[in-house]
Image (tube, rainbow, N blue to C red; front, side, top):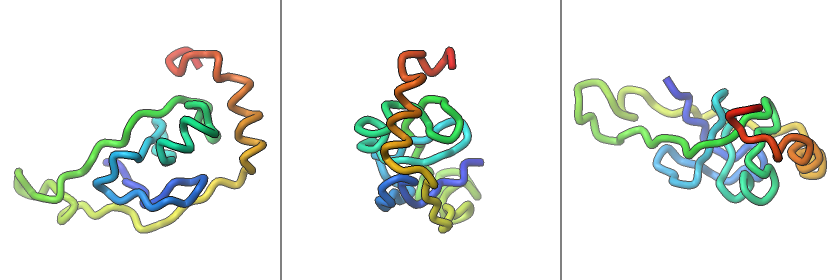
Length: 102
Protein backbone atom coordinates (compact mmCIF):
# COMPACT_ATOMS: atom_id res chain seq x y z
CA UNK A 1 0.00 0.00 0.00
CA UNK A 2 1.29 3.47 -0.86
CA UNK A 3 2.72 5.45 2.02
CA UNK A 4 1.32 8.76 0.63
CA UNK A 5 4.03 11.12 1.86
CA UNK A 6 2.94 14.63 2.89
CA UNK A 7 5.47 16.85 1.12
CA UNK A 8 7.75 17.45 -1.82
CA UNK A 9 11.18 16.12 -0.92
CA UNK A 10 12.86 19.07 -2.63
CA UNK A 11 10.88 22.27 -1.95
CA UNK A 12 8.93 20.91 1.05
CA UNK A 13 5.60 21.98 -0.46
CA UNK A 14 2.63 20.36 1.27
CA UNK A 15 1.19 17.53 -0.84
CA UNK A 16 -1.95 16.35 0.94
CA UNK A 17 -3.54 13.02 0.06
CA UNK A 18 -5.83 14.69 -2.49
CA UNK A 19 -3.10 16.70 -4.23
CA UNK A 20 -3.13 16.53 -8.02
CA UNK A 21 0.45 17.89 -8.07
CA UNK A 22 2.11 14.98 -6.25
CA UNK A 23 4.38 12.77 -8.33
CA UNK A 24 6.12 9.56 -7.26
CA UNK A 25 8.71 7.12 -8.56
CA UNK A 26 8.39 3.36 -8.13
CA UNK A 27 9.99 3.65 -4.67
CA UNK A 28 7.42 6.28 -3.63
CA UNK A 29 9.93 9.14 -3.59
CA UNK A 30 7.58 12.11 -3.65
CA UNK A 31 8.02 15.45 -5.39
CA UNK A 32 5.69 18.16 -6.64
CA UNK A 33 5.04 18.45 -10.37
CA UNK A 34 6.91 21.76 -10.54
CA UNK A 35 10.14 20.30 -9.10
CA UNK A 36 9.88 17.17 -11.30
CA UNK A 37 9.58 19.30 -14.42
CA UNK A 38 11.82 22.29 -13.62
CA UNK A 39 14.64 20.77 -11.55
CA UNK A 40 14.59 16.97 -11.76
CA UNK A 41 13.75 16.67 -15.48
CA UNK A 42 11.69 13.53 -14.71
CA UNK A 43 14.69 11.77 -13.13
CA UNK A 44 14.29 10.57 -9.54
CA UNK A 45 17.40 11.73 -7.66
CA UNK A 46 17.31 8.64 -5.46
CA UNK A 47 16.84 5.78 -7.94
CA UNK A 48 17.18 7.33 -11.41
CA UNK A 49 13.68 6.24 -12.43
CA UNK A 50 10.90 8.38 -13.83
CA UNK A 51 7.81 9.83 -12.20
CA UNK A 52 4.06 9.37 -12.49
CA UNK A 53 1.24 11.24 -10.79
CA UNK A 54 0.50 9.80 -7.37
CA UNK A 55 -2.96 8.22 -7.14
CA UNK A 56 -5.44 9.86 -4.80
CA UNK A 57 -6.64 7.72 -1.92
CA UNK A 58 -10.41 8.15 -1.46
CA UNK A 59 -11.66 10.08 1.57
CA UNK A 60 -14.93 8.14 1.55
CA UNK A 61 -15.03 4.41 2.14
CA UNK A 62 -17.02 3.45 -0.96
CA UNK A 63 -16.08 -0.11 -0.07
CA UNK A 64 -15.87 -1.12 3.58
CA UNK A 65 -12.46 -0.35 5.08
CA UNK A 66 -10.95 1.30 2.01
CA UNK A 67 -10.28 5.04 2.44
CA UNK A 68 -8.02 7.48 4.25
CA UNK A 69 -10.23 6.97 7.28
CA UNK A 70 -9.02 3.36 7.51
CA UNK A 71 -5.58 3.79 5.95
CA UNK A 72 -4.26 7.22 6.95
CA UNK A 73 -1.47 8.88 5.02
CA UNK A 74 2.04 9.33 6.36
CA UNK A 75 2.84 12.35 8.51
CA UNK A 76 6.62 11.88 8.20
CA UNK A 77 8.19 14.62 6.11
CA UNK A 78 11.23 13.66 4.02
CA UNK A 79 13.69 16.07 2.43
CA UNK A 80 16.40 15.32 -0.10
CA UNK A 81 20.02 15.48 1.00
CA UNK A 82 21.14 16.88 -2.37
CA UNK A 83 21.40 20.49 -3.53
CA UNK A 84 19.48 21.67 -6.59
CA UNK A 85 22.77 21.83 -8.48
CA UNK A 86 23.60 18.21 -7.60
CA UNK A 87 20.11 17.14 -8.65
CA UNK A 88 20.35 18.93 -12.00
CA UNK A 89 23.80 17.45 -12.65
CA UNK A 90 22.58 13.94 -11.86
CA UNK A 91 19.46 14.30 -14.01
CA UNK A 92 21.55 15.58 -16.93
CA UNK A 93 23.52 12.32 -17.03
CA UNK A 94 20.47 10.12 -17.71
CA UNK A 95 17.54 12.32 -18.76
CA UNK A 96 18.12 11.38 -22.40
CA UNK A 97 17.28 7.75 -21.57
CA UNK A 98 13.52 7.09 -21.41
CA UNK A 99 12.43 6.00 -17.89
CA UNK A 100 11.41 2.55 -19.15
CA UNK A 101 15.02 1.96 -20.34
CA UNK A 102 16.89 3.29 -17.32
